[in-house]
Length: 361
Image (cartoon, rainbow, N blue to C red):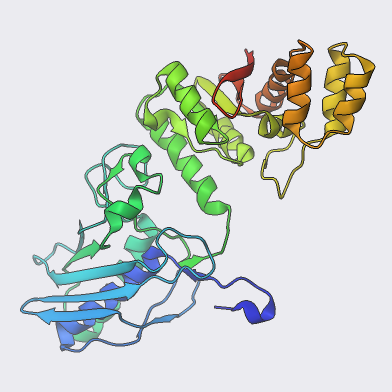
């Protein structure tokens, strides 16, 4: 992986890649009595990284190996976590059977790539592990019938910082990754979680879901409607990721909730609401005040304002429903991206969670 010397952020490895390396090392020791260190694996796109072992143990009929995950420069909750694989021979003809050890979650809701009851080890890591074990078994002249237990010490505590509890993955982390490589600060993982949240909501029969820009608006919307966790989609800044996936996988009702600044950007047509990728257009807000017949001095002040909340406060003091107008503009933008059968409303909240604007269809 590249480092910062050439100006690029350093990439890292997924939990799936680490679990594959640990599994291959343990399987090799199970058949040969020796752990390869480092251990080399093949990723889905052909790369062949090598991993140093952090722990290894060979007992009667069982081999265990652990890899410390390096997420590179990505702010990953699992960075420096120990990913452990413990293997033993399985019943003849069983193939590779996966078990959830300490700190690895179990799927409890439909709609995810893995069915309920199974360890939360995603399809690509399962395939990577299976292929690595098949290679070891061929070299040993043995059938690839192995029981693989993946564990992550402290995984249950780490999982509380992820979306797993909301998705119905209980007891720990998921073993993830589609390429084996973590790209620093990638938006793809967040958007992927939004998509999986929609899948779970559909599979569990939710008719009303909500996507919010932050924790304050999320708590307010959930309390307002009494929605279950499985109906709450972690939209964050990725309005486009939510709306475009819902267009292809529609649900009857969507509530979008957020603060005035973020919803103003959606109202302007931005689908990525991050401050580094879109900005509130104060001239646009001034025009909305003109539409509301605001005094000329208020319109002029809005065009030169420093923050969106400054504009909203001035509008509220003048008794003008600017937040409602912005919510309606945002609702129209969302409506244009959704399937006809999805009803959508937009709610705007202040920093204390009080509703200050609303548009509903």
